[in-house]
Image (cartoon, rainbow, N blue to C red; front, side, top):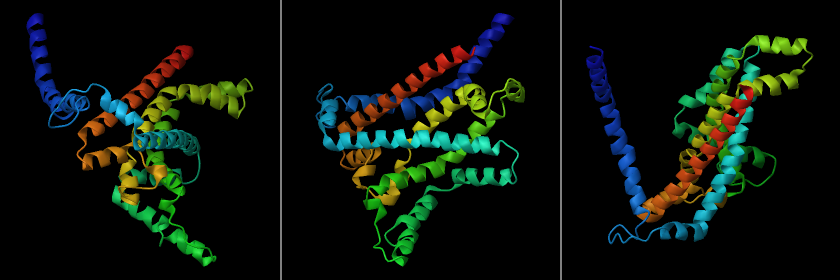
Length: 289
């Protein structure tokens, strides 16, 4: 009887898994393999195998390298800022302060705001005819087209932080609430100050949460292309010309070889970062246990 039940359970499991497997294959696995194939041929018509030549051409391409550099700079600036600010807000809102439920709601609101609304707000502030320039001209200064200057990167970072801080803050809040209060009470009895409590208790026990927030922040940093594209167009200022802009332009030019090669380079870059983070998390967890 047990064997029959096991066989039935296996069949039932495959029945439930089949739709997901089909969906994953059609929308992820097959396009992935197709993209890999296109990155190894010279064009979509002759389809002559050229190996890694497309990747070599990409590395030699100044536009691609500029996009890689800008993407790396943006990620290295925005992700740590997002973690630091969201953790600070979570610690603050985890305390007994007046109106903390209102503040929580305000910081979560950007999660449900459409991208078009975000773009409209940013344009109304930083456009050549926007509110910021109206304030500047009121003091007798010349208006500045902010998205056509080096300030453009800072504006995109502001958009990224405004969109993601609330989500990261909620994750940190859930992590903070899982830390037993007894740990802090014991630390205070032993004479530990606020900084020692933060470094030896809060940060240590928030390691899994921080790891997850870090990965999600990196992934979301690659999604900021939507806002950058809508605010500044196809060819933005050179400081915010990122990998997604490059791939979008290659798609418009029907250059699928460069497009897929660039996509795979970006994917490898993300996977390497995640693997390094997994290694760091394992070492920290071993030291805790």
